[in-house]
Amino acid sequence: MFRQELALVGYVCVALVGLYFLAQSWWHQSNDGTLYWIFINAQFLVLIYSNLMLKSVWSFLIVQSMGAVILGGTGSMSVYTWAVFMIAGAIIFTERLYNSFFDRRPVLYAIPPLLVGMGSWYAVSVSYYITHAQLLVQIVAFLVSGFGVYTFNRQLHNDQRVLVKLTQEVQYDALTGARNWMMFRDDLERAFSKVHHNRQTSLIVFDVDHFKSVNDTFGHLAGNQVLMATCSTVQQVLSEVGAADTLYRTGGEEFAIVLVDRTPEMARQITELCQIRLRRLIVRDQGEQIRITASFGVTTMTRHDRNATEAFRRADKNLYQSKRMGRDRITV
Image (spheres, rainbow, N blue to C red):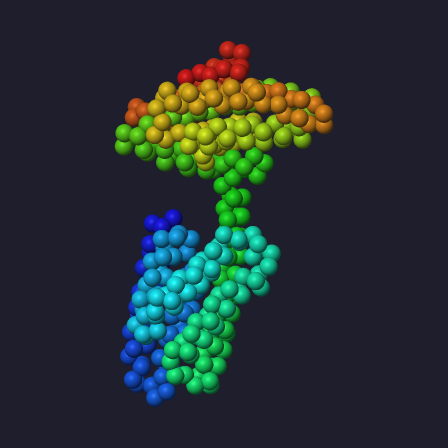
């Protein structure tokens, strides 16, 4: 998380340093110091908004410490005010942990940042000689700007949720939650390219045995329950072995698993574990108990494969060998 935010942390620190030097340059050029305090106001806004955006604790500590150093240049930062400053920033930073709460109560989302900003200006007014008119102007400016930042942040948050939803719809199967055929095709090509960099990649394909019989006997809704339970069971196995997000639904009752950096023996062990879990699975639908099994085909990509499709065909051929041998089998 921290590495992903390094660029953002750098931008925020540069902005704070830039605003500091702008404030210092206007300190003596403004008769009443109004422009100076405007830049201080901007620093408050940058700090508060960054606390809302950052997710890594290390990112927060770096930015907040930089803010303390910058504001310390005004001579108003003591040990006490530094502690209060860090605590106030932490309060805003922890809002990200309660996104679901604030999504239902958007007004409450803006209260901690606004209170922290107003408290900061009160602390400044105590340390410096600022007329009541100047203080009122800066607080109003902060509230207006803060509301604008709040509105922008909420809109950005909503846009991100829409983007996540669209990405989910494009990349994942709506019924089972597994990745879809399009993602399988792209990820398989990427996995195949790693074979030429001495990285072992295995491919597992499987489908639910006698699935048409399940639909004909219990109905399509029961069939959907079987597919969802199958996917959930296999996904649990993959999560346990550290191979999450590698399950794909490639057809009706057909699935595939792409394993990068796993030896052929490890791929077989994972397949056997999936087979055992599916044998134990009981799907209940309207009082009926449905037991299922699956047939598996496993292969390892090699440099001799001309392309990823050739490896997929080999795994598929192994799958149908399992079915010809009586189903509920693994062919490597």
